[in-house]
Image (tube, rainbow, N blue to C red; front, side):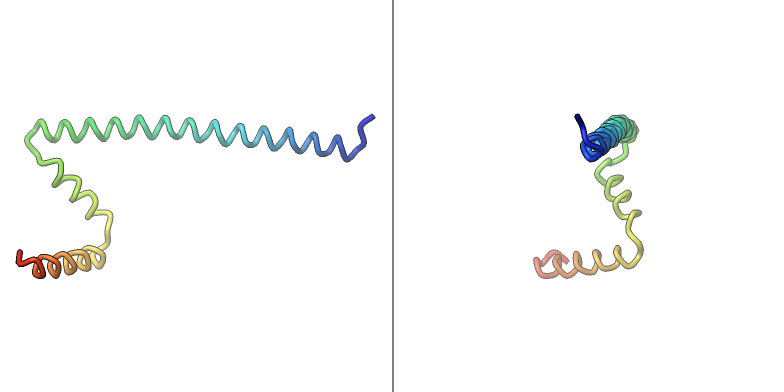
Length: 89
């Protein structure tokens, strides 16, 4: 027959398998939501472009708004330095 240890191991494996399945299903749902949001963002960029806005500039603005002022200042200083080194300033 089965010992208590064997039954305990089997029960914990069943619980672990259930937890794993739950994690995977949650991730799959979130991936689907992420795809939907990405599609929505793509649609907004297309709408902005159709209105005459430069989407490359919009993407740059969004990236810059995620940074704090110190990060933006540092990036601008480095860019200015590199441009000067290339004779572009």
